[in-house]
Length: 306
Image (cartoon, rainbow, N blue to C red; front, top):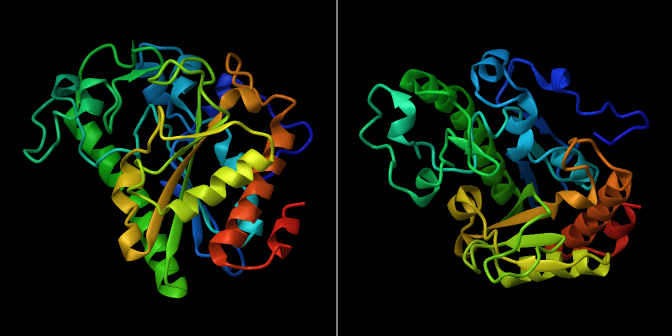
């Protein structure tokens, strides 16, 4: 999962493909740390029918994709942590939402009575089946069958979260605790809610409710030591995954890590930049330091990323 020389560029036809499975799980031969890394938004298999039925070109659909984040965090496996990567793209289905955050204006047919149709994310067009990408660009030219939306949830969303829950339960049973790293990337442009330019790394712990301060402090120190600007929670405090899985009082800590795309890719062409390999190494080194501190083990772990 490293980025080899001659890594193929993100040409549109490279990503038009049917979704063969909900996720791919990369596992170490032996899980050595109480850590899981999940990547819910880096899926780059866009079904042809979805692409042809959208009102936007493929490159615009990919604006919501956390491109190559699975590769950036791939070093976690060599450090003894499993890595769970969604195969479906975020524009098609968002695993970082409740299972049924659905906008009734999007669908032909009646939604289930238990659907959450009034959340702020639904109002903003960013429900489980997104209505928009980028700067409020509508994905669909009209309504889509409600059966299609429900099928995506049953066939992709539910298996993804079943797989993630299994990893969390297994890790906690084996180690007594679990730290879930929810890995994402973010556009470099724009300001946070206080009008300050975004940092290189934003750590989200739902304002202290999804992970203990020890977990977040270790991550902040590791990335800052690498020379990156790190902030917490603004404007990304964490989504459904950190909120749903994070239960520090029960020994499960969930930390969202957002990485600025300007550090590793061309945000216009969606191609990896010359800084990709260096950032990949920085993230591996930071994860080695975090894993060591979170596990209470020796500094030898830091050397494993070098």
